[in-house]
Image 1: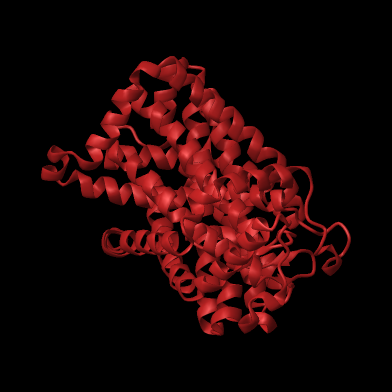
Image 2 (image 1 turned 30 degrees about the vertical axis):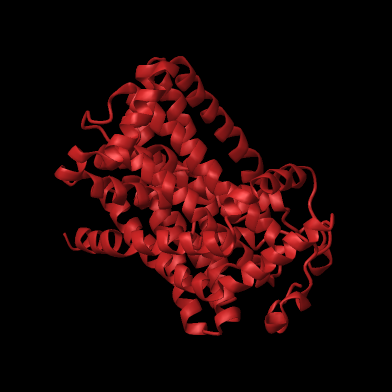
Length: 466
């Protein structure tokens, strides 16, 4: 009851206003960067998939640089996971079809938050022993000058991603395997823990290589399957869109109070999935070697669209096409049942495999977010090793825990972490906007934008890598 009360207060009265308010402010200040620069995002994605910028390689040992595409893949691995399959199902089951509309709103408006935070992460990143490091803790410390504030955020994100979110991912894998194959949750817990520890003890380069090939492949297969369902039920699309809009704004829903629940669940599960403004993806964005901070800011903005407008929407359409959204099922079980209705019973085997891969890649990316923030607090090797062992323990326990408990705990820590980050980017956002103005000026001159520390003279001595 206490956890539910805290969640209700944070998500009903605080997070919706803060997230959407900040998103609208940055949309205006950047002149709609998430719309006007969409073509540039696609160009950068294609370019970064072929090669990465060499300008900053000299700062790190040979072979230690993370490409822009690899950084994009690591962040996408954290975004594309349980939230896209189980989270969407929970949002629809609890908030109705109207929750999908609010997921879209959070993605479209909130993507400007994603641009600001990831650009700031690049701007204030530092050189580590094995890769660049950065994120909210770093730009809070360097930009705002508050070590205590920065450490508070670092602690919150370490708990949220390394522990709470990873328990959610492990829990979803265990439930999916048990429901489909009858696999004991204990067996799943042991195997999942062993695999996770094997990867995370390899460091960010192994994490980047793992996610670079896994995320695009698994996302492509899942999206193709979802598009097949939509194509075969194309006649239902007008009905589904009407269902979503009616449930988001309909008079009947307003009288019954369900609009508020749709908004809360859409924002909550939308944020869990796309992470725009949450302060997580800047940790991955900072690792990339690029010639201008805005390049990675735009790449991460595109990640929000891929996550919500493509993957989450595909899941929502599958569920709504099936008509099972009010059947009493929820989570991964609802999504499996809906997909089985559309393409046959074998679908649950595919979906279980997909969600296992989605969630496992998220566990790996989530771990990195925790580690990079621990490194900010202390460079103790013992602390990092202890954290890795703790993550393995949490993955094990999360596989065995109750569904409602792990999601509730994740929602609280996510809310607190997001509030810390939004306040920081509202304070520092002017620097990211200055970077964007500089980027646009260089592009208009036909140049491949290059950032210099003297571009923003007021923080010239705070930007270590430029």
